[in-house]
Length: 192
Image 1: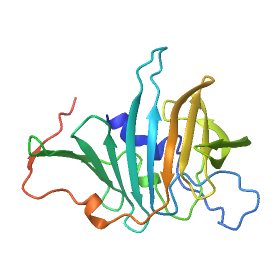
Image 2: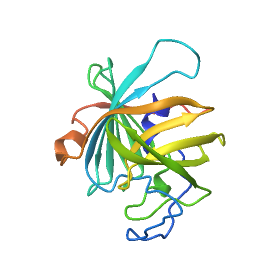
Image 3: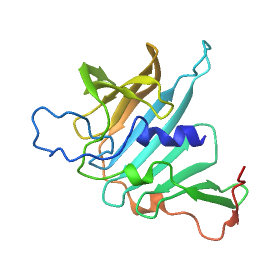
């Protein structure tokens, strides 16, 4: 589930200094520059018909992300200002707080650092996006399709679509979406 929460930071290697007005950027925005609500289809790495779905909501002004896996009551709220990821299980009235993966790399208004090669353009869920080849967080070559304003639309690894946006709504996200419910018991994450 935490892997699924890392959609925002897939392929990120930090923040660069290219400006938004750069007509030929050398890397994409990998953080949405606007509030957005995206539903993703996640395909398993092995040949199987089982797929997962999850909803990702992002607040640009709050630098917060919420990920709700389908068919699960547990969800995750990441606060990039605070550097925390909170796993919320409202049914059991518990929460677990861990450091946010890639929090140091999430910057508004800055493009990703690292090696990125723009390989073309595509349309995913009817929305145009630029294809960028890079190494993902597992150091494997991946092609990621980002919109000009930093919304991840698709991840392809070894020629196979791994993650694909099925719907995108650029709408303001209410603060309540990112509020951890009060009164939850905090469980401490196990450390190996």
